[in-house]
Image (tube, rainbow, N blue to C red; front, side):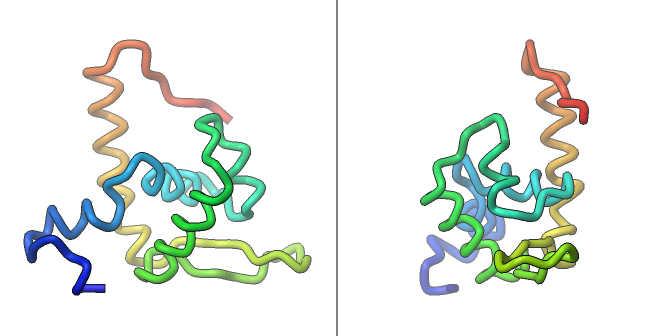
Length: 111
């Protein structure tokens, strides 16, 4: 994957991985305990299924998420964050805090 990098700058490399409008929202949903494809499509942002498939594959290929067999069984796989993905938690929390402080009308969803 290093060949697709714009530069060796760590910020640029991070943005190459999750700097689009959807990827961090999928990571957010994983942090909130969502794990199945249908769970992600139910998020209020309305991610298109083709983009969701692409972003999940990107997260798996970069070691941020992994495919797992869901505890309740079934034929469809589920997803969960790896340690690398969990390491994004403080980043997302900082972004949430910034949005709450500086962007009028933002709120944290409950439930």
